[in-house]
Image 1: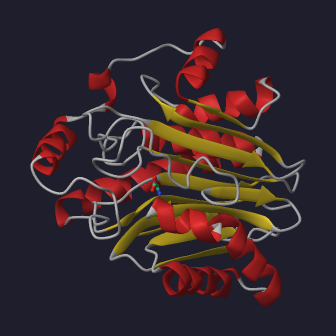
Image 2: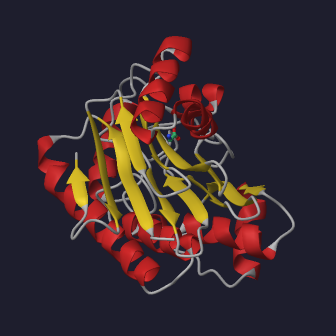
Length: 299
Ligand code: GLY
């Protein structure tokens, strides 16, 4: 099988001063994942590598650079899925961990569970040898300033405030063995209620992968995405329509019509054809397949 990979750096209203950083970030992520796939690595390894690059890049709302919650803390969600045998791992509301996508993979590979939350997830992380970090390793001055501004204004992450620069990062990859994997990571929405969990760590909502159906990663207003199981929904549309671009458009139409939702979706078909769609002003994203000399990068 020829490999393919697609990433997003979040859907939202990305201000012009962050456009270049977003484009550079998704390009670096896709190149890292692509290099691994070409060398014969698994789709899951490529997804993890691409998402880690975006978690470490403060341009994105994931890992370092995440939005702060109403208490001025960073609470992170992430999930991943291996489409070969439908293995899943996810974490929610974890603090002081640099790369929650790696922790979600540890849940998948090294526990009997699919989802660990809060302090239990952090205890698992320490048991698995993950180093703790400080709040200042995750919260950057840009987000402290946003938090302070929001503190004195609106406080709830409902639809109207869902106009952040963009939220969430994600990746879907197909490897040479024909296996699909997907992963998604986020700091959630700005000024969210402590303990609030969005779509990202919920299987079928923030991510989904099945070698027989394809793979998908979501971004956007998590409460709306969770109600329509956006990542699984787009693969249902792919089965019906056969075309990943049409499937992405249909899924985002459903999101808007059924729950007045806002967001974006990326996907790969089982044979590695890409698709994406969003109804936010922007979604940074990139993809690469074996017929291309360089990735397509868009915002
Ligand atoms: N889509 C990310 C979130 O709402 O948490």
